[in-house]
Image 1 (cartoon, rainbow, N blue to C red):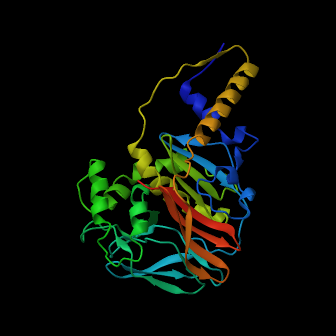
Image 2: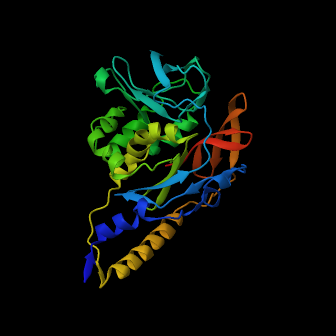
Image 3: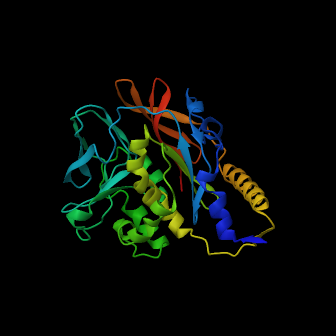
Amino acid sequence: MTHTTGHERHRTGLDTHAADTHMAGLDALMPVPLDLDGLDGYRVGPPQRAGALTMVPVWGPSRPGIVPPRSGLKLRRVVGYGQVELHNGAPEGVAIVPLHIGYIQDAAQNHALCSSALVAAGQTRRFDDACCVQAGQGGYLEGRDQWFFVLPVELRGKATRLRGRRDYAKLWPDISELNRAYGLPSRGHLEQILTRKRATLTQFRSRLELMPGQLGALFFVRDRFAGLELAPDPGYFAEMWMALVCFAYGVAAWQAEPQPAEAEPYEVTSLAGLRAELARDREAWVERVASWLPVPDGEARMVEEERYLDLRLSTVTAGRLAGQVVTEHDRLVYASVFAEH
């Protein structure tokens, strides 16, 4: 008689190597009806779960020539509070600045951007509406620890609504509230979460597997949709992986971490029986995750913010969903759409 524990059941049932078919086309699951051509070229795979965080990998058509955020896009300097400069150092190719990217750095206060952007090759672009996410002078990291993050999903809706507003302290009240909710000192210091809890948060990077060729993901916290992230190509998404899994969605998942629960084991008498039980468990889990996708509760709107050649950066809203997308000839190139808190 073969026994498989509940923990093993979920781990095995979500093993992406064990599944030969994908859940569905992304066009059937898209949480925001963007009315774009070519979404049927995207497909999603079996979900993976790490505690309260569920990730559904996405594959699709690549758009080559977009400069990735870590190896090509650099923080040149912090001009002043709420003012930062980013530089696209690539010899060719436009950089898509990831939505709500922020930088932990040495000798200057940490900032995050309220919007995505398009930066041409060799261009240095100044952003005057950045959010300072460190209220005060203390708490700097050493230069060897510099890295970038994406704002936690709990802050992303507010940050999007604050784009264009020149006020470096505009996110401090929301950061303070988030810290207080998580049992931390009520201050506008996001590094209380991002750096002091970094060892815990970075566990999501290893507990969830970035799949070969993956260029996007659907994220869920507990049983609720948290966000959709699509990159131009797998290389771009790989450079975003840690920032998204550990910080954009890992913070909420860390707080929602469920208590370990015992599950009844399978009771089968053969390997074939075990495989059948695992297949049924996997199918049921896929259907359950698909049921968590939201039904838009408001009219979807796309407002163009800027353009570069044939690339269009637009802000998307649909009920309690918001975010930004980059399109080219009405085909999706980049997307960061999240559930507002």
